Length: 432
Ligand code: SF4
Image (cartoon, rainbow, N blue to C red):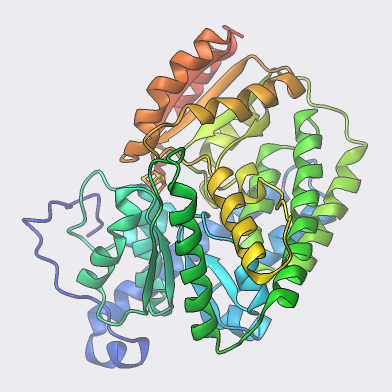
C-alpha cells in the first residue's frame, strides 16, 4: 500500500520499519520486498527522465556529462567509494558549503524529487506532507544507509525542523543530527551574531566527525574553489537570461552539484557554457520561476513550459540559481574572519521564505527582470509547502505593483494534473 492510499496516522500506527541494512533483511522479509520494489521503481523513474533528456534534439555531450553522472549508483556507499571521503547528509542550503570542502567531506543534499520514492514512503505519514520530504522517506526505505548518515539540519520550515522525529519514528538506525538554528528575524541587530555562533558551532562539529583539524589555509582554498563554481554557475545563469539554456538542463546541472567533486563540476559547467554560448536564443516569451524547489527527477513543470514554447530565463529556487547565489566577501583572512564572512554570506544571501519578513524576495526578481526583460512570474507551489504558500500571496501583490504578471501553480509529483497545468500556463501566456 502506498502512502497516498492510506495516510491517516491515527489509522496507521506505524511500527519502526528499518533497522540497519545488515540485520533487517534476514529478520524482516516484508521489509526486504518493500525495499526491492522501491529500488526498482525509483531507478526506473530516474532512467526514464534521463532518457527523455538524452532524446532531446539539443542534447549534446556537454550535457551528457551530467546525465552520465546521475545514471551512476548515487547511494552513499557508492559515493563514498567514488570520492574516497565521508558523506554527510544536508537538508537545505543555509550552511557554508565551503566547510565540507575544507574538511574533505562530501555533502549529500537530502531532498527527494522522485514520485516513486514518495509512493514508497511508509504509510502513516501526514496526508499533506511536503512531497520533497515524503520522497526522502521513500529514498530511505530504498537505502537505509541514507538514514544512517550524520545529518545537518538547518531549522528552515517546520517539515525540515521536525523531520528527525519522523525519521526516528519509522527507522531504528539513525545517524547523528546537528541542528543549525536560523534566526527568523533576519534584520534584527543580534541575528547576524546568533547565526555566526551557529556557523562556528557547525564548523567544530564537522571537524569532529571528519577527524581533521584544518584551519584558515584549508578554508581559503575551499572558498577559492567554491568561488570558481559560483562564477561558472553565474555564467550559465547569464546565458539563460538570454534564453540560451533550457531550464531542464539548468536544473540538471544544479542537482548534480552534490554528486560530483567541486572542481570537476565547475569544469563541466564551464564546458556547457562554451557550448551554449553560440546557441540561438529561444523565441518564446521569457518567464521567471520561483516558489518551492524543483528536484530531479521531477521535471514535470519544466517539461510543460518547454512543450508550450515558453522559456525560463531565471529562477530563485534553492534547487536552481540560488544553489550558489552569493559570492563570499572576504575582508579579514584570519580563521575567525573567514567564519564571519561565510556566516554573513549565508545569512544575507538566503532567500528562503521562512523568515518573519520576506520582502527581500522581490529584489532578485526585479534585478532579473531588468537583465532579461520578462513579463511573467510562475510560482511553483508544492502541496503542503506552507512557507511558500504564504510567501506567494505577498509576492503576487508586490509583483503586480511592479507591473509583472503572476501565476501560482499548485501541484505535487503526480502526473495527473499535467493537462490542467498546461491549460493554466497557456492562459497565462496569452496575458504576457
Ligand atoms: S520550504 Fe517548502 S519545499 Fe522546502 S522543505 Fe519546507 S515545505 Fe518542503
